[in-house]
Figure 1 (cartoon, one colour):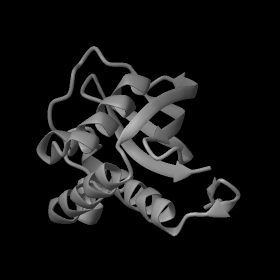
Figure 2 (figure 1 turned 90 degrees about the vertical axis):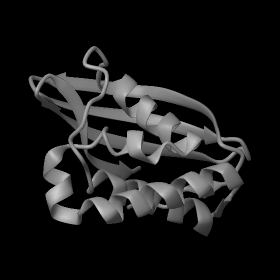
Figure 3 (figure 1 turned 180 degrees about the vertical axis):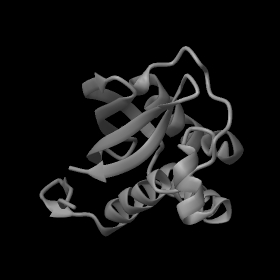
Figure 4 (figure 1 turned 180 degrees about the horizontal axis):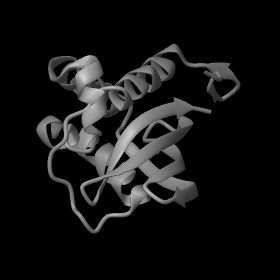
Length: 142
């Protein structure tokens, strides 16, 4: 995992938030999302749900395989923590899609998140197509 730089220094709080997002990517539930969403919109919808504290909705954006590895309770706890941290940092100011690659039923989306306090992070999401819906199957910081 690469370190994120915020105004020339590493932010432990931001790294903690990103770690939680990575853990969220490893934990999942398989429930309904908008079937017409592409991979980038799925990622953005997840982030906005977490920002608003919509934990039950947020868990629906993850692949079923992740749930069996981590468990739903831990996923919800991670999402709740991330939501609180996002609110404390001024929420999400912007989400910029840097790259989207789709090959069959697998996609990678690289995004840049700018928080309300001005900090910026770049994340790469792996998504898989499950029953016609894009689901997050992993998250890495860049």
